[in-house]
Amino acid sequence: MNIFFDVDDTLITWDVKLRPHVHDVFARLKDDGHTIYLWSGHGPRWEVVRRFDLHHHITDCFWKPLHNHRARLTELGVPFAPDFAVDDHAEIIEVFGGLVIEPAGAPYGRQDEMWRVYDEIAAFAREQQPRPSPGA
Image 1: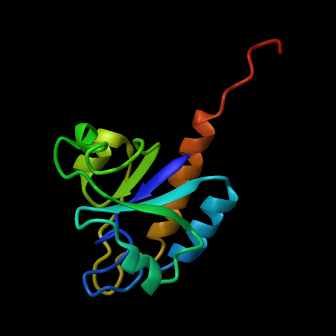
Image 2: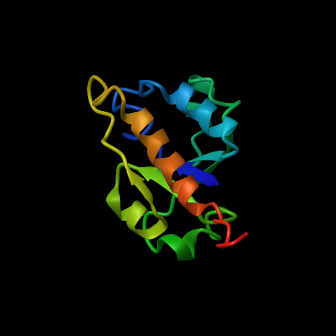
């Protein structure tokens, strides 16, 4: 699956600290065969990828559409819609599907929030797997 993560208040706190367990969860998602992208209303956030050494997890970074979400994907250079999005704004999840995450507040909000994200993605991926037909 193509999984799109928001950056501000989703992966990093207001004071630019990485939420706990991001590296571990991203590694598990990659091991599970998923492709991870970042997107932000502030543009491609390669500085976050560099600052927190996320380059081995992240395939690409994009502008996140803040209105007319689906219609603006092409305009913003996003080649496809997410299969699953993770964001602290419910509006994005209502449009693309995925999970609304608790904002990464000070000091970090729930310490296990990224593991909750992993569990939700894993459950969603299992539901998407084709089921064998009866008698097969």
